[in-house]
Length: 153
Image 1: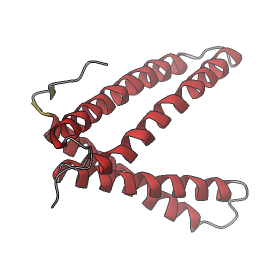
Image 2 (image 1 turned 90 degrees about the vertical axis):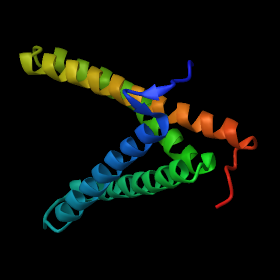
Image 3 (image 1 turned 180 degrees about the vertical axis):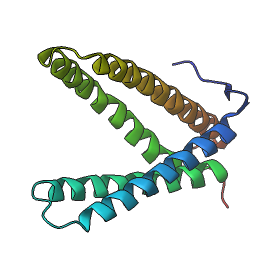
């Protein structure tokens, strides 16, 4: 994989911090929504699913904070959990995409599905690019520190 030199028109460090900040805001929003959902009575089977998503969003929030700290203090070991989670998410989205295609075929492929498929593919590609930015910064910091532990604060 070719290492990137910059993110759009800014440094990899700045790009990583911006992406981590956006992810942090999204994680907090998901946690807040799920907390509100859990206040509703009679959720039935949705309740355990909401709890699972809440745990996942909490883990993502922790990875977001670690990524920000790792990028700010040049500690690659703190960036690694976010990278691992990002790879897992991108891999898990592939079977979800094929499920979405199967549902589209079974239901007669309404035009809405066409937009959903294009949106899904664009979102996946954008997520892969963002992860590439973060991995490139991680590798730069790791090379700079020599041993992968980063500079002492």
